[in-house]
Image 1 (tube, one colour):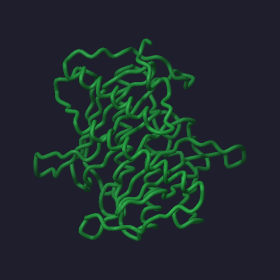
Image 2 (cartoon, rainbow, N blue to C red):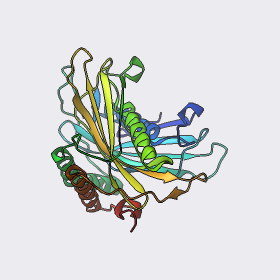
Image 3 (cartoon, one colour):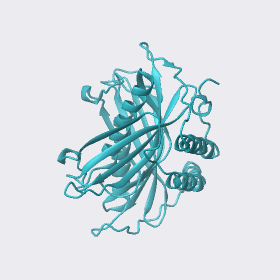
Image 4 (cartoon, helix red, strand yellow):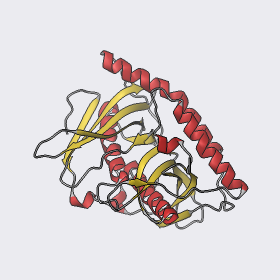
Length: 324
């Protein structure tokens, strides 16, 4: 780990064989786990307190990370609120024997500093001093309104059993190996579960191998505790020219009760691939029930909101409907 600047942390390591997932390379869920760890290190280093993941912004997954690659994850604090830290995180890798470095993904992660009672506490304020730092701060500020619109749209949408689209539910118990440094399940593990559920849902729908190309609006509502029953529900809500838009809800609860609470929600876009790893068209999903139509419209609304974000050019496979 490097801490060349007080507001920045870089983790460097080799991608291990056990990091390889169903895609044949490092899965998006593992990359998200790395992002969460690096951003956590930056947040704790800045605030000098325990921190929790609050939000992970839009992240696009491009070139794959392979076993043996030298991975570099850099997290930089670019803006601070009263208790929140907005952290720009970049994941890149290269062959350790040499060759060019490839940037695989970047996103904004928001952590909140909390005290021993679990309530938010103030953090030192970050004051940008260079043109690059000012630009990054302004970019973070410009996205706050868009992020609030996305969160409000997600909170307003209801999901019931009236939907007819492909749907899967994974259930298991959060184990001690999932614990973070504060005794709870860390956000990176939760995002890994989200990727796994989205993969199962998308692959069942199209009958092909699938891989995540985008995750957005990952909102953490409450902590998930070791020993809780976990339910990860993934549901198809929209199909683009190649992308399958999967809404994922993570719920958890004490096994001694029947109460399950929403802990995390996000939207993930998966694409189908052939034997050569090339993305291929997928069957168009046509909404049937009223709920299907509402979820379809909800997915389009989120796309339109994200399309208005400063400097955000969404790929065609996200914008175009299947068959167009």
